[in-house]
Image (cartoon, rainbow, N blue to C red; front, side, top):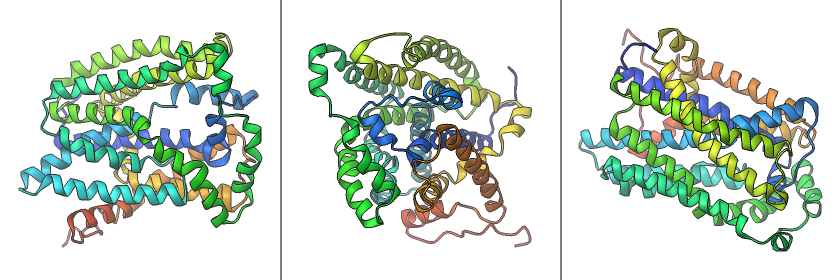
Length: 401
């Protein structure tokens, strides 16, 4: 697979393309929870009986999308952290205090997003992880990779602990029957006034999510470290790492095959593990997610070194350049569509997925149009302004000026 060397400007475009691709995957993952009581279904391990096209879409999302994209986003956060710190250091700025301010602003945005709009917010988690990541900036690459793999091993071990619980204790440890809470949950999203909905969400969604941060942060932080490792090693900065990227693609692609097959067998009921089905599904969903995450990134990186594929995928860079804006916009669009226009719980999985594709295409077109006139996305501009403490020019300067 031959292609041109990676120039510094092309490196940034490459990261933006991968980020745009990840944002599409995140929207596909989030969409069922935007239009259906997915939170309760997952919490109580409810097997929703999908049929026909919905069953095909569900299988595709579980096998090739779930867990595969927040990991890419987390990896890119680690790379972005390295680039931010490196630039601040080169300019003689107080890089640690500057990043702490940047992460604090992200935490505020994330908490507002989590509390007032969307239980699936990832920004608050990234901000918390960002505070911890500063301690690893000066660590050697080997140390980073050891920490990253160790954290993933700990996370997978914690997921596997369920298998050591005796069968007769599994029912006793359950949260109860989803049917007891589903009617209230659906009512809150379908019909309740905003303040009543908000009060309910804080108790049922927000507080448990915040309590669970120490657990959910583990894989996120592991991929932060993988990204920081890639930044330190300069993996995206030159063609010298092309053989390494090819090896990553081959190894992770091969590893993914048995994980995906096991997940498929579990989802289709062809592998009967009894009361441990939910735990086994989660385990193989994560295993396949971690391996396919690297496979997707390696494949995209190799494709982007070919001129023909650069052109085909270049439109994703505009979505990626304003990922924060587009991520928050996805919530606003879906909240408006499903909650305000009363479509909640009235949209099938396949239709919801089609809506997600339409939304993303619209975001791609809007993002490209936006950058014809502006240098930063609107939320990126605000984030930058509060980080550096001065107003940066938002509009793109004309060639004449």
